[in-house]
Length: 463
Image (cartoon, rainbow, N blue to C red):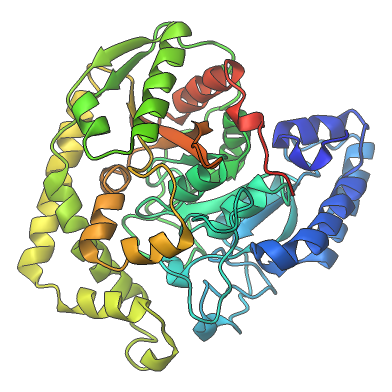
């Protein structure tokens, strides 16, 4: 229990169930840690100590009476501040929504509460969940090195989870926003199949691209959280009706029969050598675990990447039409994106849609021959906050950075981001596995197998 804040979610849940620690003790310990570190890290938009202690006391009483709800029962977590929370502000990283206090919970928040999780608070994000933080928001700080990129848009989720301020969190991913902060902060992030998790009560960035998923310290933790939040929701007609499996049931089954595709040209072109090395090392480890590593060719993603910006911008403009341009002076850099979206022609939008359909179809065909894809999370090994501003200041710079993330949002594919080493500067490296639609259980199993053979996910920043 010495490293209590850095236990995995499942370890914390097991300690609670075996009475080694109580939900009250655990929650109080994390609230104390938040009070100590949050003035430096800035990962929370709102901390909810009263609610957290109320939920912790309820969890303790239920568990003591034999009413155990599962592995999340009594475990402190946090959610990205675009998830509606009844009676608690949902600001979406914007001053324009600072006083937005929903009357009901988002479906994912309700489902986490139904699983017995304890809500510590709401986590900071970029403006409207796009690329940059609003000028009035202090960006979360990378706990490994304050000078370096902490990820976007789920920056607070990545920082809080890596820093031991919660045992798991929710992020959202439209163009990499679960994957980039997971990579930057050295944690594990699961972007589910589009429609696997309800978006009811989630402020949209781009509705047809938004994925909501867990960010944790292990693949198994991701499986536990996904099991709590996934499934059909009558309040979100885009959710999928497929039954939700027990993502932990076969987690120790190994990967000896799994075919993992690797496209060396796709993975290594214009990629930092340290990223290339991390992906190659991951392939070697996975092969050693019994997986078959197969040379493959990923469908040409150039067109879908080129069109993704305009496609996303149109949907962003729709999401903000009640406040933009009527309150344009309250926006930061997101205003330019909305203007761009409002200027996209119908012809350009449909070309983008056709490119999306073509890529998605070609990718689905590829998965007839393989079970998983192994690809980088991002082309850069690490970069400073100053370099981030320069990189994301031009459309081409942003497009280049997103090239391993955007295609799998456009296709709606599930992905798992895993820590895979460290750079010469001491910053985390990562890679991602991509799966067939609705095969998150396989991703979790493969990620767990990798993490049983490596210890990158067990390394934590010194705070």
